[in-house]
Length: 402
Image (tube, rainbow, N blue to C red; front, top):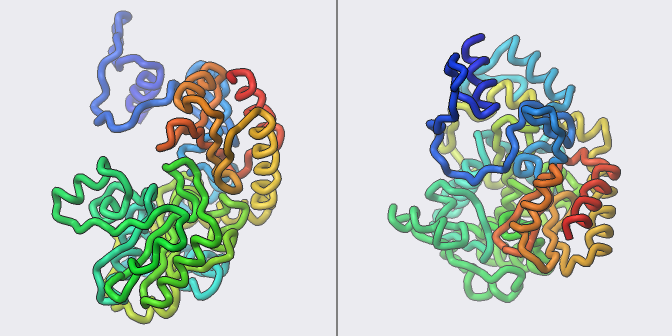
């Protein structure tokens, strides 16, 4: 173990594990699938990452909206350590109190009849299960999705994600592509959502497209079309859920309730977990064996998720989200933003210039932000515990680079 730790420390500093004084950098065995931020974090504290040199970076990206309670929140760390010391894992073959309690807590926080929960490992898997449930319940196959929508890279959800880059693997595998409705066009559902459609899947806030939020009118039209056709309305809240809008679910924030909500990213403050929350009416149409996940709802991720929910409650994190949102939106407009998209702490800001260039300039100031599918939109996805003072630091850095 000590040897492995030494090798990890060496890798973090860009060295090989050689004991020679002439140690040189060697390529990693990792498959290069992501462009890399210019930071090697070794520790995290709240909204800050500390690199191998001890420099502090303000994280307004949050590991892609995952670090909901900040990096290594003490309460979440304690819950993980305590649970790992008692029982690291057992599959769904046995009942676990942590899994059952987390399901109860999520059901209590979801609006309407969203009262039954299935656990898995990721957002893509949660969305795959949502599509499976809709098809099983309706006996239909067609899916309607939204232009600009992004739902994951596995084959089933790649077929409902917008963009040839993501859909190509599904096409090659023979998976039928979804039918697209134009973003924020309420009339787009007319004549498209009919008795052959199993489900409409929509992100209330389109994360990858630049935190672009649906209008309430658009979501109401989707709800009405599904009701008329007997189709299932699915909200992909992988990025915009679990408090990110200032309400626990985006459904509550928009006031339009779906039949299925999917969650992941920030649910366990960094540990992998996904959840598909469905109505009791849909649950009644499922049979034992229809769904399964070996690692779904494991005791350690569930303990982390329960601790995350406790932090949201104890520290009035949702109130903080709304307060910091107001500061960021007001500040961005004062800096000349042409458009501010999104809600809560999922914001897309168009300053009328290249988001990638702005991101790189902010790196020089040790500030992390995201880009998006819109080349001019910078995405902000900081921890939900991001403070007003940290928002002011972020705005000051943006002002400098502008």
